[in-house]
Image (cartoon, rainbow over all chains, first blue to last red; front, top):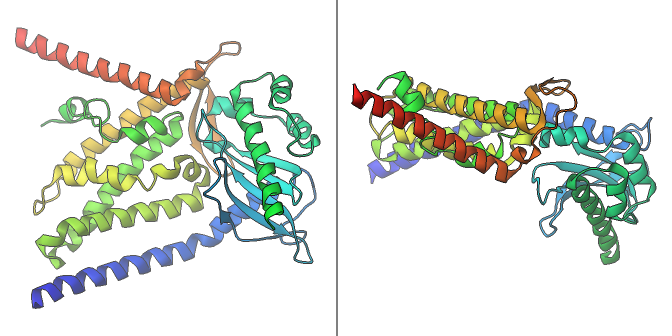
Length: 184
Length: 206
């Protein structure tokens, strides 16, 4: 019995020590992680509002994860000064073929697309290089949400299936916002 | 066993087929490939060092669980630090970062030392080096031929990337896809086995 308690006690103490160290390390670096997250969102907001500043114009809500959707992995609400949700930032994972590139897309509460950012790091360089230029981004945004056809985008870009998956994800994001609105 | 045999004959990726999942998934870029390899070596080294320092306090019956806990601890630490300091790499490695715990256990700790043996740091280092070199080579091959570039590292403010192909030459994009990875791996494995066999035959002929 004593031997069992000895082993159990030491193992418990070790687990507690590990948990405490992990907690401390996370606390120390979390401001840096938060800063990076804020900068990424700010870059996204600047795609349609050049002088926007998060914390001033919008406050960032907690990220919610979505498991029931093939392309939408999560969303972050942005609130205006009055505390009302005015924008949803969706984390989209296109990539039926190339499974690892992530898109942050901002929608108005009616599902209209405002802008999007492709997280370059997730995709191989050749795809990054051929991903939408600023003008293409503008043209997609001008279609106001999910009204564009994927074939039109192919024609604009003259590029590969990457765009098709991107457009599909953006459309799905818009549909996701609309369905949430209907549920509410 | 000498270094050459550890690196070549027991090459964990191309001969042993160990850690293939990340080897195929993250090698579409050179930087993610070599960083993943280095992380495996680093975590293995730190894990063994921690275990070596703490083992006297634990009963031999629970050594295995302590090993797992220590490796998982270092993997989590690396994950947190990567998220904070190299967020691009953290995002690119994704699910393969937590999987490092399994790879490290398979590649270094469990394979090399049965419970109770002293740590064989040199053997570990050579195996780890084999893993880093294999991933690096695989990653460089796929990125250069697949996208015409070589990405050394992605820092938050700057990406160190070189254009390898001349303008006008189209890269073979297929190599960046999962199927391209598998086919490339198959050719490399066949090459490794063929060279090994040839060396054996020539030794037998002497």
